[in-house]
Length: 345
Image (cartoon, rainbow, N blue to C red; front, side, top):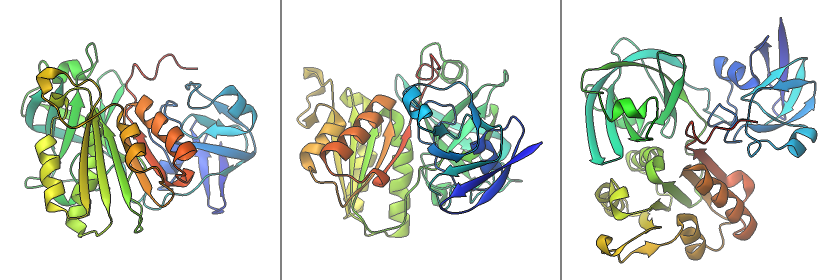
């Protein structure tokens, strides 16, 4: 049994199999919908159910509150249609442009710039044409069926030879995947992954951009900067990278160099817990508040934010409420860990 989901205002219709979510069906058929975590935790896929009935799987109340659900809002990542449905959702050109592939991948290189951050280079298989947009992510497929998501930190024009993708992984003590990365994973080990996923990538236009990152949320932002450099973009951009201590700015020198090479890019690092040992003379406090202090009027900007959910949520709330940022000019990828996803609603 299948149901038909019709998107408005585009009028695009597609089939959804029994027990399949709206988003999974859209991804399978190359239809661009906004989304992030695919786990009911980030709220990026929130849409309006105009007609029909769905059943929601487990999700977080912060992603979809009971009041929002009662008002007809749904999360397409965990909403399973029970009838034909009409859904109001903005389309994302390019989100379904490249096929989602499952593939083996080999560890080409692994380094640890800090005690809790690993940089992986994962070899792309020669017999599969893996394509992606800067800002998208892949999922590692673990043996027990669980998945772990990481964004590509290099633009698709910078995969090198042999072709590989760069991933930035923060150690989450007790983490099913990151404990392995920081203990036994070594060069030449083979893993399985699937991708590309996500609707976090640069939109076309000429508006000045704020590139906002916290921690390893810097990874997809780095890919966006590489894309800007390769394309010769003239769009003004400013990178705000927030971390606790100076050592947590694990690619600070890269960011400084990028700003030196791109005349339209500025770099503003911000530390929230700087100590005397850091000998820090730069900005301090919460990174999104540094943006607000420098750019109190964001009405003509676009913001690309990536990092821990608390930072992304605060930035979206405060930028739109206090800095006149249009709601549709905020693009985000919240790094939701397994700890962030529990407890589920």
